[in-house]
Image (cartoon, rainbow, N blue to C red; front, side, top):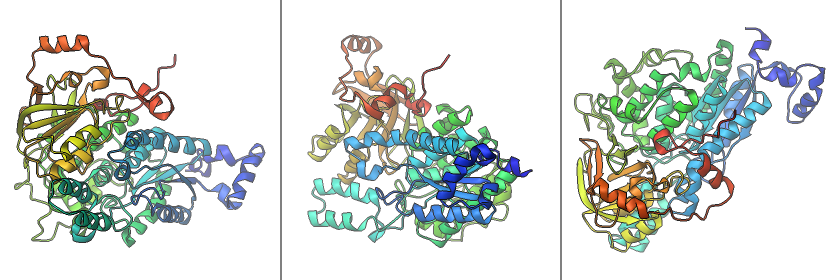
Amino acid sequence: MSEKELRRYSRVVVDGDEQAPSRAMLRAVGFSEDDFQRPQVGIASTWSMVTPCNMHIDGLADEAARGANEAGAKGVIFNTISVSDGISMGTPGMRYSLVSREIIADSIEAVVGAEGFDGVVAIGGCDKNMPGCIMALARLNRPSVFVYGGTIKPGAKRRDIVSVFEAVGARSGGKISGDELLEVEQTAIPGPGACGGMYTANTMASAIEALGMSLANSSAQEAVSEQKIGDCNRAGRAVMHLIQEDIKPLDIMTREAFVNAIAVVIALGGSTNAVLHLLAIAREAGVPLDLDDFTRIGARVPVLADVKPSGKYLMSELIEIGGIQPLMKRMLDAGLLHGDCLTVTGKTLAENLAKVADYPDGQAIIRQLDDPIKPDSHLAILYGNVAPGGSVAKITGKEGLRFEGRARVFHSEEDALQAILDDTVKAGDVLVIRFEGPKGAPGMREMLSPTGAIMGKGLGADVALITDGRFSGGSHGFVVGHVTPEAAVGGPIALIEDGDTIRIDAETREINVDVSDAELDERRKTWKRPASPVRTGVLAKYRNEVSSASEGAVTIPPAWD
């Protein structure tokens, strides 16, 4: 490939007399004369000090730029935003969480498109900036590698952020003292890195590796480790190789690659948010993917990982025994993965896994295929008169496969949480939290505060929760989210009343309220959408453009003729 072809985008910005002003600006930020002849690699950093998930990523970005430079490119670091789910959880600020995914994708697209970068390394460390990065890379379709910032080390007594949310419920239930709650708060988060179980960050890191968009074993590294530093350097080098070979994200993100990603998420017992994010990424990649694909794939893929929140072990403990690559090798050998999918290494998935050793004897974290935790997926796509457009449940079997109870209806997460904490919620209740969907919140808030309080109160087996919002990867129990159509657009969940009987069946994949169609029609005649306090700003723009949760809650601008 010629020099100009290696600089397909940057040469437009820096070549020729007419681009002297551009070169003058770049000299001021450190470009040498030789740098103008190198392919430019943008390093999209999500560093900030607003969350421990991302507080170390500035150093990782430096290392990725160093790797790109050593490989003959010119690394250029730029920033995008990050917000913290753990900090904003249970507050109005959580409305901005899913919205930030779109902002991140838009901002990376804007910078890379404006600056003429020939390749991209995107580094994400928290729930929404990870899929946001991948969505941008799909849009841009320039040689790219994603780097996961890495998981946090365990806190004292193997605690993590979910320990704190559940301790709040335990304190409310009189199971621990105020001093004990403070001790959990002070020791759960020891430093940099994403939440330490198979929550959304580690789920999406694993999914992205299975998708082929990060280097082999990149998802199974601690944030503070030599392995993660080396991973970043290799990523910078890898992008140069991808530029030379003209391998782009849409060559990698095929339909088969998405099947691989879904299969790995299921085997790991991953977050329900993976459904939302993989649908969104697939749309950006132009790959057909829908809710029912999760059911079809889930019918043949077992849950094998005994990891938090539903299991016992932390991500750091999975890393100690080899990470996810031995699991992927087992799945490949069993015919559960497409081995011929191309990856950012320039090799196929099968080639990447060819020499991977199995887990050590005696480990208890990853089960054998013939001894699964659950023989099929924990991600159940449920339909019925509550969710004619579908909903997503996370049911491992530990909480049972069926639940029937009386509806207790709330118009916000805050109201539901208060009812849990003050003992208004009783065994046998099905909490219905509505107007928390993509348009209703707006922003589709996560319900970790109420689910954490339910578990902390010891009601995990006795109370179900359904919502048109979504759940943190740390949520567990009998929970159903992403109910579609959402309440804000008049979906049936808006018509449920206190005392209605709700039946949830993970085996038949149904969620129904025991109310006749005629009665629902009568209720619909008098229903009015509550007024929203959101009138301007990014939340209002998001509400106007966002699709349903069953379509990934992506923003779709109006058509331009």
